[in-house]
Image (cartoon, rainbow, N blue to C red; front, top):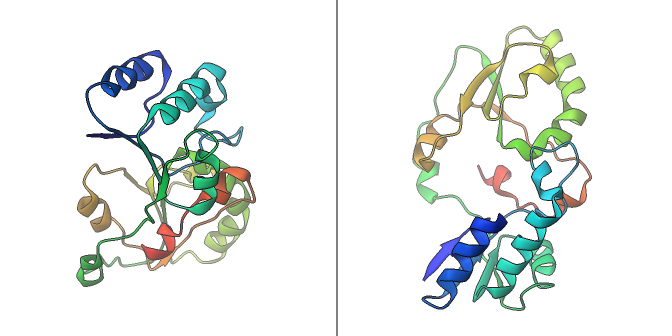
Length: 193
């Protein structure tokens, strides 16, 4: 069995179709990539060839896994065999000592698809940071510091989940989400973290 995510384009289609006759295929998806916002880092999802290759690969899969019911509804248009595997965190995270900083730390962790979310959150957060100089801002994953007109602490993505968790030193965690179709399929993973 092969479990994969976002096999797209001619090369992705060739791989996925080539494996179809050899093993079971499970297509994993945790974002509504067919409804990206124009401002997101997922602009390539507006390319019709990319979108069609994605739909075809989902359709030929033996099973599609998603993290939420709204996303399951989207995927069932292309493959009836969809199951929801809710996002979760490892319970051992509750016993991990969170790194402490000298300053009260506001933080956010996420990817390129959140530009629209940060466009709406930047001004209010900038006002808080301007008024309270004893606060620190920490971005993990993608650095949206330019939207805040200041240099903030930044940590790139870590491939290992536990290394990622150890980088989260937030006293206050932010999870802005704009009212957008793409976001309606999001899970509650940030609240869990």
